Length: 107
Image (cartoon, rainbow, N blue to C red; front, side, top):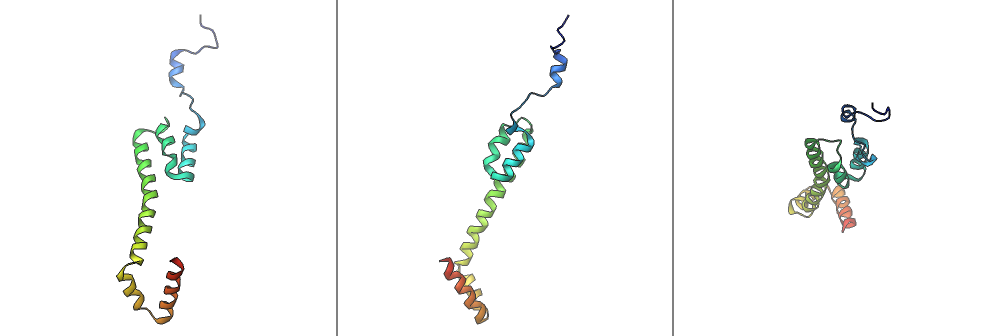
């Protein structure tokens, strides 16, 4: 006869193993939304996500991080281009002066 406190193998199979709180889904999402790609290691090590979710979420986080950087560099490159200078020269004098003042502040 089995002791009442011990569980059978069948009941042990139904119980999920206890994981640290920082691997729970809610904690991983909080990390990803607050610290961005620095939360990816917790996502990858979390047993609560399947492999497809881990890959998809990781790629989304990397894209969300890199895209604004790329667009920022492109904007700076465009502002320094001759095409932008030509556009500024076609503006009315008041607007042209305003843009030149803003560009002087950025230098």
